[in-house]
Amino acid sequence: MFPARYWREMPQRYRLEAGKCKRCGKVCFPPRLVCPKCGNRTFDTVRLADEGVLKTYTVIRVAPSQFTGQSPYAVGIVELDGGVLITTQVVDILLDEIKLGQRVRVEFRRVQEDGSAGIICYGYKCVPAA
Amino acid sequence: MAGIVGYGAYVPVHRIKVEEIAKVWGADAESYKKGLALVEKSVPSLDQDTITMSVEAARNALKRAKIDPSLIEATYVGSESHPYAVKPSGTVVSEAVGTSRNTHCADFEFACKAGSEAMFVCVGLVNGDTVKYGLAIGADTSQGAPGDALEYSAAAGAAAFVFGKEDGVAKVVATHTFMTDTPDFWRREYEYYPRHGGRFTGEEAYFRHVATASKQMMEKVKMKPQDFKFAVFHQPNGKFPMKVGEMLGFKREQIEAGWLAPILGNTYSGSSPMGLTAILDVARPGDMILMTSYGSGAGSDSFVYEVTKKIDEVRDVAPKTRQQLDKKRYVEYGVYAKFRGKIRMAD
Ligand SMILES: [Zn+2]
Image (cartoon, rainbow over all chains, first blue to last red; front, side, top):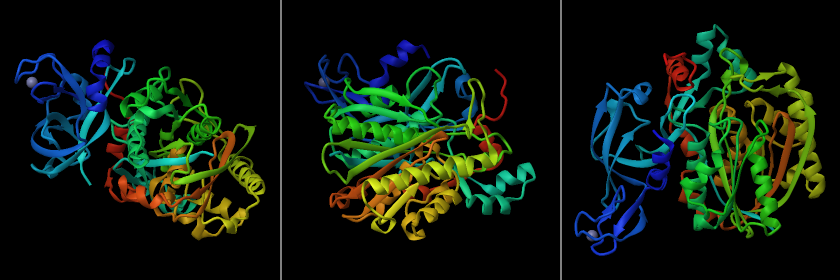
């Protein structure tokens, strides 16, 4: 990943910062320029909850090159408390132990790195809660 | 006077047993377990490093501190395993936890003493009214060379503390330090694994510095071992902290609460700071705590804390250190070697 793109996405990747529409209140994650619900262009910055429920997941067995060392791994859709859905890796759990509806917690992890000489990209992943 | 306003630890979920490592190298597990007083150690997974663990420990500390992170004006990460050779760990941690953009940020390095250094400097800056709140972190994902005695103990973990000019959960009664130039353990640039002086790492290195710093500290505050409810010393293995405690006149019961090495291993810069978090998890208002770190090279930082009644309000707000230690998943040596990057991969 190019340093500039990674840098631009830091607020959402590091702190789960979302945009809350000033007109209709819809929370967009990742943040958007235009509210998909009402077309408004002004947002407040809000931070999403750091816990939620795993709604669905899939197991990636043939991974893109920068993730091959991690495969097989689970990518799920998590509904964070407050209702926003995020797509995220689910880690620190055996693949056959993952259960739909289980509580998960957001943790800060390495997401990918640009070889051994490039930048390390950090972001969120989910782990089993408690 | 400065106090610890919030504290937190982070322990990765994976563990490897001494037996599993010994099996690979044809070593006698029982003699390692006995010699090191250690049965297993924590293992970071592929997506964990000093930065990720620092962020998690800092988030736990901030939950307990109950302050707006933007009030943090100093962010220091002490480690000997910073992920980048050039580029600070502290900037990532600072952005991830949302400190002030005017936070003074630096990475510290002094073998296993880097975490307590960060704490020492934060205490000074708070006491001198330079910063309102300071975040000090000790974290490491250190490696021992395969088959070396260090491989049985080199572990991963982090501890974070928010210091402020209020009593917080524990007042910082005094700080003290002692150092000499002692080449007991080192790693040269571009070398992957550290080297050590074998038995030389004992008497003239660990024991001399920890004992001297602790003794001088007790003279400074006019206290004796029996005046402390708890003591925590750097834990390169399970044996050394108990031995130095006994040398100084402490009893086993005073050391046990913060004695994590037997089931955690040596978390280097995180070691005595993590022990302190485990002590704060069980301490009562009024308890006095002595903490003395050790970093090869060599030096020790010593701290005396007095626990306040605020501890009861915050200890359950974030995961306790021993709770995290209880949550574990064992890995075999092959997986451990993969997690630790010990396997040569194709480009
Ligand atoms: Zn809208």
